[in-house]
Length: 302
Image 1 (cartoon, rainbow, N blue to C red):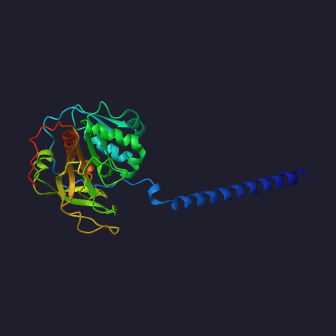
Image 2 (tube, rainbow, N blue to C red):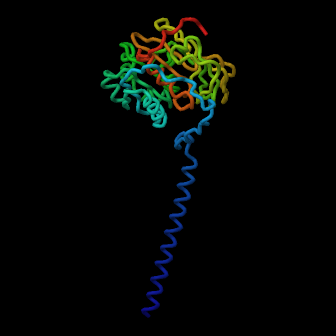
Image 3 (tube, rainbow, N blue to C red):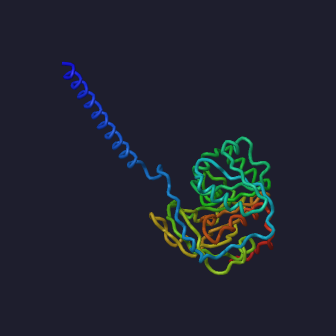
Protein backbone atom coordinates (compact mmCIF):
# COMPACT_ATOMS: atom_id res chain seq x y z
CA UNK A 1 0.00 0.00 0.00
CA UNK A 2 2.77 2.39 0.96
CA UNK A 3 4.71 1.65 -2.25
CA UNK A 4 1.63 2.26 -4.38
CA UNK A 5 0.92 5.58 -2.67
CA UNK A 6 4.55 6.69 -3.08
CA UNK A 7 4.57 5.79 -6.78
CA UNK A 8 1.27 7.64 -7.29
CA UNK A 9 2.67 10.79 -5.66
CA UNK A 10 5.91 10.53 -7.64
CA UNK A 11 3.95 10.22 -10.89
CA UNK A 12 1.86 13.28 -10.03
CA UNK A 13 5.06 15.28 -9.24
CA UNK A 14 6.70 14.26 -12.52
CA UNK A 15 3.59 15.24 -14.50
CA UNK A 16 3.53 18.65 -12.76
CA UNK A 17 7.19 19.28 -13.55
CA UNK A 18 6.67 18.32 -17.19
CA UNK A 19 3.74 20.73 -17.39
CA UNK A 20 5.87 23.59 -16.00
CA UNK A 21 8.63 22.84 -18.52
CA UNK A 22 6.13 22.96 -21.41
CA UNK A 23 4.71 26.28 -20.21
CA UNK A 24 8.21 27.73 -19.76
CA UNK A 25 9.23 26.70 -23.28
CA UNK A 26 6.02 28.17 -24.66
CA UNK A 27 6.57 31.48 -22.83
CA UNK A 28 10.20 31.63 -24.01
CA UNK A 29 9.14 31.00 -27.62
CA UNK A 30 6.44 33.66 -27.35
CA UNK A 31 8.92 36.17 -25.88
CA UNK A 32 11.34 35.54 -28.74
CA UNK A 33 8.54 36.02 -31.25
CA UNK A 34 7.53 39.31 -29.61
CA UNK A 35 11.13 40.60 -29.70
CA UNK A 36 11.36 39.73 -33.39
CA UNK A 37 8.27 41.88 -34.02
CA UNK A 38 9.77 45.01 -32.42
CA UNK A 39 10.37 47.94 -34.79
CA UNK A 40 13.93 48.06 -36.14
CA UNK A 41 14.70 51.39 -34.38
CA UNK A 42 14.14 49.80 -30.93
CA UNK A 43 16.85 47.20 -31.53
CA UNK A 44 20.44 48.00 -30.65
CA UNK A 45 22.11 49.36 -33.81
CA UNK A 46 25.10 47.52 -35.22
CA UNK A 47 28.16 49.80 -35.54
CA UNK A 48 29.28 50.21 -39.17
CA UNK A 49 32.30 48.24 -40.33
CA UNK A 50 34.53 50.93 -41.82
CA UNK A 51 37.19 49.87 -44.36
CA UNK A 52 40.57 50.91 -42.91
CA UNK A 53 41.88 51.56 -46.43
CA UNK A 54 38.95 53.78 -47.49
CA UNK A 55 41.45 56.61 -48.05
CA UNK A 56 44.38 54.40 -49.05
CA UNK A 57 45.85 54.35 -45.52
CA UNK A 58 46.77 58.02 -46.03
CA UNK A 59 46.36 60.93 -43.62
CA UNK A 60 44.20 63.25 -45.73
CA UNK A 61 43.59 65.98 -43.14
CA UNK A 62 46.80 66.87 -41.32
CA UNK A 63 46.98 67.78 -37.60
CA UNK A 64 46.46 71.48 -36.81
CA UNK A 65 49.49 73.60 -36.03
CA UNK A 66 50.08 74.54 -32.37
CA UNK A 67 46.64 73.47 -31.12
CA UNK A 68 45.32 75.47 -28.16
CA UNK A 69 44.03 73.80 -24.99
CA UNK A 70 40.25 73.99 -24.90
CA UNK A 71 37.43 73.11 -22.52
CA UNK A 72 34.89 71.26 -24.63
CA UNK A 73 31.35 70.21 -23.75
CA UNK A 74 29.58 67.44 -25.66
CA UNK A 75 25.83 66.92 -25.47
CA UNK A 76 24.94 63.66 -23.72
CA UNK A 77 21.21 63.12 -23.97
CA UNK A 78 18.36 61.70 -26.00
CA UNK A 79 19.15 61.78 -29.71
CA UNK A 80 22.91 61.40 -29.18
CA UNK A 81 23.89 57.69 -29.05
CA UNK A 82 26.94 56.84 -26.97
CA UNK A 83 28.91 55.38 -29.89
CA UNK A 84 28.76 58.76 -31.67
CA UNK A 85 29.83 60.57 -28.51
CA UNK A 86 32.73 58.16 -28.05
CA UNK A 87 33.89 58.69 -31.64
CA UNK A 88 34.14 62.44 -31.01
CA UNK A 89 35.88 61.90 -27.66
CA UNK A 90 38.52 59.80 -29.43
CA UNK A 91 39.26 62.72 -31.75
CA UNK A 92 39.59 65.18 -28.85
CA UNK A 93 42.24 62.89 -27.36
CA UNK A 94 44.52 64.02 -30.22
CA UNK A 95 44.24 67.64 -29.02
CA UNK A 96 47.00 68.14 -26.42
CA UNK A 97 45.77 69.75 -23.21
CA UNK A 98 42.11 69.85 -24.23
CA UNK A 99 39.39 68.27 -22.12
CA UNK A 100 35.90 67.07 -23.00
CA UNK A 101 32.95 66.86 -20.60
CA UNK A 102 29.67 65.05 -21.20
CA UNK A 103 26.84 67.46 -20.40
CA UNK A 104 23.19 66.49 -19.91
CA UNK A 105 20.27 68.39 -21.43
CA UNK A 106 18.90 69.40 -18.00
CA UNK A 107 22.29 70.80 -17.01
CA UNK A 108 22.45 72.94 -20.16
CA UNK A 109 18.88 74.18 -19.61
CA UNK A 110 19.58 75.06 -15.98
CA UNK A 111 23.18 76.29 -15.96
CA UNK A 112 24.05 77.02 -19.59
CA UNK A 113 27.55 76.42 -20.94
CA UNK A 114 29.60 79.03 -19.09
CA UNK A 115 33.22 77.98 -18.66
CA UNK A 116 33.42 76.03 -21.91
CA UNK A 117 35.05 77.12 -25.16
CA UNK A 118 33.04 74.87 -27.49
CA UNK A 119 29.91 72.73 -27.39
CA UNK A 120 29.57 69.70 -29.69
CA UNK A 121 26.38 67.98 -30.82
CA UNK A 122 27.23 64.62 -32.38
CA UNK A 123 25.31 62.29 -34.69
CA UNK A 124 21.95 60.73 -33.90
CA UNK A 125 18.65 62.61 -34.26
CA UNK A 126 18.57 66.40 -34.43
CA UNK A 127 14.86 66.59 -33.64
CA UNK A 128 15.26 64.35 -30.60
CA UNK A 129 18.24 66.36 -29.37
CA UNK A 130 16.17 69.54 -29.72
CA UNK A 131 13.24 68.03 -27.81
CA UNK A 132 15.58 66.80 -25.08
CA UNK A 133 17.04 70.30 -24.66
CA UNK A 134 13.65 72.01 -24.63
CA UNK A 135 13.27 75.66 -25.50
CA UNK A 136 15.17 76.71 -22.36
CA UNK A 137 18.15 74.53 -23.29
CA UNK A 138 18.11 75.62 -26.92
CA UNK A 139 18.13 79.26 -25.87
CA UNK A 140 21.09 78.63 -23.56
CA UNK A 141 23.01 77.14 -26.49
CA UNK A 142 22.14 80.15 -28.69
CA UNK A 143 23.28 82.59 -26.02
CA UNK A 144 26.50 80.64 -25.48
CA UNK A 145 27.43 80.94 -29.16
CA UNK A 146 26.14 84.50 -29.51
CA UNK A 147 28.42 85.62 -26.69
CA UNK A 148 31.51 84.07 -28.26
CA UNK A 149 31.33 80.31 -27.78
CA UNK A 150 31.98 77.75 -30.49
CA UNK A 151 29.46 75.29 -31.89
CA UNK A 152 30.31 72.05 -33.69
CA UNK A 153 27.46 70.00 -35.15
CA UNK A 154 27.96 66.60 -36.79
CA UNK A 155 25.13 65.09 -38.86
CA UNK A 156 22.26 65.40 -36.34
CA UNK A 157 24.06 68.35 -34.77
CA UNK A 158 24.22 69.94 -38.22
CA UNK A 159 20.44 69.54 -38.64
CA UNK A 160 20.02 71.11 -35.18
CA UNK A 161 21.96 74.22 -36.24
CA UNK A 162 19.86 74.91 -39.36
CA UNK A 163 17.34 77.74 -39.59
CA UNK A 164 14.41 76.05 -41.34
CA UNK A 165 13.14 73.90 -38.47
CA UNK A 166 10.77 75.21 -35.77
CA UNK A 167 12.65 73.03 -33.27
CA UNK A 168 16.15 74.02 -34.44
CA UNK A 169 18.67 76.40 -32.96
CA UNK A 170 18.61 78.68 -36.01
CA UNK A 171 22.27 79.63 -35.65
CA UNK A 172 23.23 78.73 -39.23
CA UNK A 173 21.59 80.47 -42.20
CA UNK A 174 20.92 77.17 -43.95
CA UNK A 175 17.89 75.17 -45.02
CA UNK A 176 17.68 71.52 -45.98
CA UNK A 177 17.01 70.92 -49.67
CA UNK A 178 14.32 68.30 -49.06
CA UNK A 179 12.22 66.96 -46.19
CA UNK A 180 13.12 63.43 -47.38
CA UNK A 181 16.20 63.10 -45.22
CA UNK A 182 16.66 59.29 -45.33
CA UNK A 183 19.04 59.38 -48.30
CA UNK A 184 20.98 56.35 -47.12
CA UNK A 185 24.55 55.56 -46.16
CA UNK A 186 27.84 55.17 -47.96
CA UNK A 187 31.27 56.63 -48.58
CA UNK A 188 31.02 59.85 -50.53
CA UNK A 189 33.65 61.69 -52.56
CA UNK A 190 34.41 65.10 -51.06
CA UNK A 191 36.63 67.99 -52.15
CA UNK A 192 37.91 70.92 -50.05
CA UNK A 193 37.00 74.40 -51.34
CA UNK A 194 39.19 77.50 -51.49
CA UNK A 195 37.42 78.81 -48.39
CA UNK A 196 37.89 75.48 -46.67
CA UNK A 197 41.65 75.17 -47.18
CA UNK A 198 42.63 77.57 -44.35
CA UNK A 199 40.49 75.56 -41.93
CA UNK A 200 40.77 71.97 -43.18
CA UNK A 201 44.20 72.26 -44.78
CA UNK A 202 45.40 72.49 -48.39
CA UNK A 203 43.99 69.14 -49.51
CA UNK A 204 44.12 68.44 -53.24
CA UNK A 205 41.64 66.25 -55.09
CA UNK A 206 38.84 64.03 -53.82
CA UNK A 207 38.77 61.87 -50.70
CA UNK A 208 36.22 59.59 -49.04
CA UNK A 209 34.05 60.29 -45.99
CA UNK A 210 31.41 58.18 -44.27
CA UNK A 211 27.90 59.52 -44.82
CA UNK A 212 24.70 58.48 -43.03
CA UNK A 213 21.60 60.59 -43.77
CA UNK A 214 23.28 63.91 -43.00
CA UNK A 215 21.66 67.20 -44.06
CA UNK A 216 21.92 68.42 -47.65
CA UNK A 217 21.83 72.16 -47.20
CA UNK A 218 21.28 75.29 -49.27
CA UNK A 219 21.43 78.98 -48.26
CA UNK A 220 18.65 79.98 -45.87
CA UNK A 221 16.47 83.08 -46.01
CA UNK A 222 17.25 84.64 -42.63
CA UNK A 223 18.12 88.30 -43.20
CA UNK A 224 19.48 88.55 -39.64
CA UNK A 225 22.11 85.85 -40.17
CA UNK A 226 25.29 85.94 -42.28
CA UNK A 227 25.77 83.52 -45.16
CA UNK A 228 27.69 80.33 -44.46
CA UNK A 229 30.90 79.37 -46.28
CA UNK A 230 31.16 75.89 -47.80
CA UNK A 231 34.42 74.34 -46.61
CA UNK A 232 34.11 71.16 -48.66
CA UNK A 233 31.67 69.87 -51.26
CA UNK A 234 30.17 66.47 -51.99
CA UNK A 235 31.30 65.18 -55.38
CA UNK A 236 29.16 62.02 -55.35
CA UNK A 237 25.80 61.12 -53.85
CA UNK A 238 23.40 58.54 -52.51
CA UNK A 239 19.67 59.05 -53.06
CA UNK A 240 17.50 56.25 -51.65
CA UNK A 241 13.98 56.10 -50.21
CA UNK A 242 12.53 58.55 -52.72
CA UNK A 243 14.93 61.36 -51.83
CA UNK A 244 15.65 63.77 -54.71
CA UNK A 245 18.46 62.86 -57.09
CA UNK A 246 21.08 65.38 -58.13
CA UNK A 247 20.90 67.71 -55.13
CA UNK A 248 23.76 66.25 -53.11
CA UNK A 249 26.61 66.72 -55.59
CA UNK A 250 28.24 70.15 -55.12
CA UNK A 251 26.36 70.80 -51.85
CA UNK A 252 28.39 71.46 -48.67
CA UNK A 253 29.80 68.53 -46.73
CA UNK A 254 31.22 70.95 -44.15
CA UNK A 255 30.30 74.61 -43.69
CA UNK A 256 31.14 77.46 -41.32
CA UNK A 257 29.64 80.78 -40.29
CA UNK A 258 29.56 83.30 -37.49
CA UNK A 259 26.68 83.76 -35.05
CA UNK A 260 26.92 86.88 -32.96
CA UNK A 261 30.43 86.85 -31.49
CA UNK A 262 30.70 83.07 -31.84
CA UNK A 263 31.37 80.59 -34.63
CA UNK A 264 29.44 77.64 -36.05
CA UNK A 265 31.06 74.64 -37.76
CA UNK A 266 28.93 71.84 -39.16
CA UNK A 267 29.63 68.54 -40.90
CA UNK A 268 26.93 66.62 -42.74
CA UNK A 269 28.99 63.37 -42.96
CA UNK A 270 31.07 61.61 -40.29
CA UNK A 271 34.80 62.37 -40.59
CA UNK A 272 35.26 61.57 -36.89
CA UNK A 273 35.32 57.83 -37.66
CA UNK A 274 36.58 57.87 -41.25
CA UNK A 275 40.19 56.64 -41.58
CA UNK A 276 42.44 59.45 -42.82
CA UNK A 277 40.13 62.21 -41.57
CA UNK A 278 40.81 61.91 -37.84
CA UNK A 279 42.01 65.53 -37.61
CA UNK A 280 39.09 67.15 -39.43
CA UNK A 281 36.81 67.56 -36.41
CA UNK A 282 39.68 68.81 -34.17
CA UNK A 283 40.35 71.49 -36.81
CA UNK A 284 36.65 72.41 -36.78
CA UNK A 285 36.67 72.57 -32.99
CA UNK A 286 39.72 74.85 -32.93
CA UNK A 287 38.29 77.10 -35.62
CA UNK A 288 34.94 77.40 -33.84
CA UNK A 289 36.82 78.46 -30.70
CA UNK A 290 38.79 81.08 -32.66
CA UNK A 291 42.02 79.21 -31.90
CA UNK A 292 43.05 77.70 -35.21
CA UNK A 293 46.63 78.80 -35.85
CA UNK A 294 46.26 78.93 -39.63
CA UNK A 295 46.03 81.69 -42.27
CA UNK A 296 42.70 83.54 -42.42
CA UNK A 297 40.02 82.17 -44.76
CA UNK A 298 39.67 83.51 -48.27
CA UNK A 299 36.41 85.08 -49.39
CA UNK A 300 36.86 83.76 -52.93
CA UNK A 301 34.18 81.24 -53.88
CA UNK A 302 35.31 77.72 -54.88
